[in-house]
Image 1 (cartoon, rainbow, N blue to C red):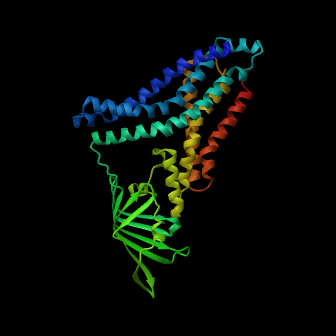
Image 2: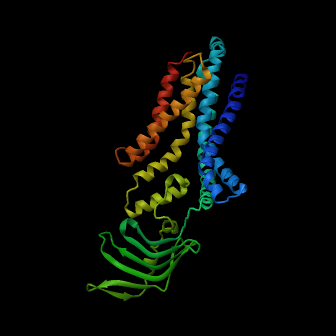
Image 3: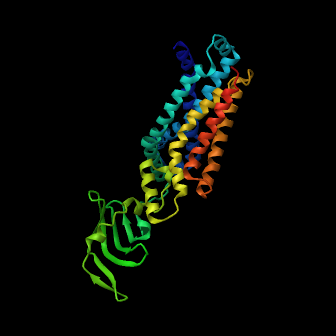
Length: 358
């Protein structure tokens, strides 16, 4: 237990310092990229600081993997350089046994990083983006015009002239219903429809229903069977395309389900969804890599630690980028695109640990 406390006593302060440093650098880079526009638009110091505050969770999320890699690599390499690891090995304590608490903590951190990003980072980053766009005078509007949404694998088609986010309403709407062979069953036109949160569907106002009879469209009584099929969420009307990376897992899953129902391609979105779960495990991987690379050199420990953490991070990011592109184009599954880098680097870490100086 004393060895565990000793190890964390060395790693934790360095990790916290590195995390704060990397997070600060990212925040300052964002500030300096926009400072000229802030000043030109007469933005107050309070508003600028608020943007930076909203950006802090995102920068911390970015900084954690690099910080834990640097701190682990530096501490273990420094202990090798000062013969502390050799003393442990001589006393019968293996390298894996000594560092397994780090692996356990890094695994817990990986789960924590996912929940931190899903429940907090996404929301604060959205606030930062909106406020920053306002200060930079970039116009954004969640209302939408000339919306067409395909649902139920093409069996239900929505067409609205205008969507209003504040009231969750669509105006001048056509709802087209088709059977499995895509033959027309009915068309419902209404002046407007509003989203009913309790029922989870659209409520039509001033609706008229048409059905094909003898090759012509005739007015027929409004059918509740068709109305009950109007369940496509209002969020799809607000955003005809959603960046899966910028929303939480629940919203990403809802958007992917919409693409599936519409019969549209969703490989890229599904791989980004799986990436939300896979990417946080970079924390576990970089710690494992640090342990496997321990003791490769006794000289220039700080420089080597920095170089190794940069090289390992870049290599992981590049590998994931390649697999994600392959998943996007359907060469591998979406699950493999997100998780294969994690599995591959875990195996590499095991091999490195097997041949580490013990």
